[in-house]
Image 1 (spheres, rainbow, N blue to C red):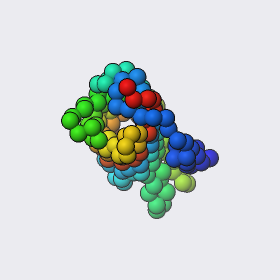
Image 2 (image 1 turned 90 degrees about the horizontal axis):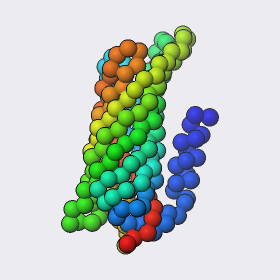
Image 3 (image 1 turned 180 degrees about the horizontal axis):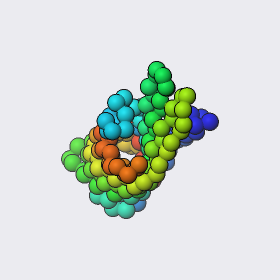
Length: 185
């Protein structure tokens, strides 16, 4: 069931034809990213797969408010088998920069959210804890097509989360697609 929701959302996004896009204020975006995250060594020695689902609204050409759901997980075989999973819901302030090349839109973002870290041992107990998470990230969107409605998005992020009475730092690299929603002015 946990895998069915991300797959369904991804397929829905791919199949939905977005409205005309623009790079100005008063429009939004939907997108998803896949990538890799290096867990803090206090959490896991393994790298982890990462999935992001995001949606945002541009209040101005520079400022966008974005919601992001992030799932990060790693698996260690052996005895016991260990599944480490981190899920975070972020609210991000995104600052979009518009150079003369309108196909490329670099950005930086800062976010705050709620994190849940779970560790499942087989055989053994499952433990989890929740806390606050912060992120800072930078990347670019590379728009293509005549109307620039679809973009490839590449992002490098640093996430700090506090669970189990300690703060851990995770570094991730993701790539994905973004659909701009709204009309051009």
